[in-house]
Length: 79
Image 1: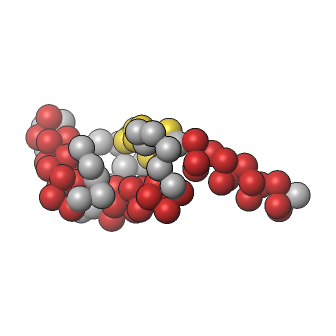
Image 2 (image 1 turned 120 degrees about the vertical axis):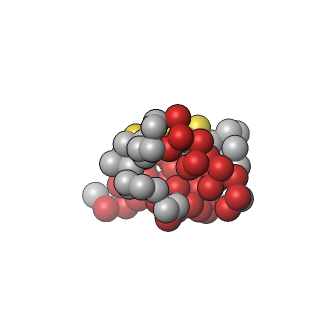
């Protein structure tokens, strides 16, 4: 599913809520396929966070090399 496409994100939300008997997932795991630039990764997370869930997920886990490298670099700069 491409969560950067609004219709596909809505379909994902509907599928999750129907399979969870009307509830929303509390944890969402995202595997960024390939090497997506950091802007695309952040847009993906924003789409998930901005979706109209029945209850906001308490955690979003993102598997992304670029996000890891970006956060690692920001941490070095703050030291």
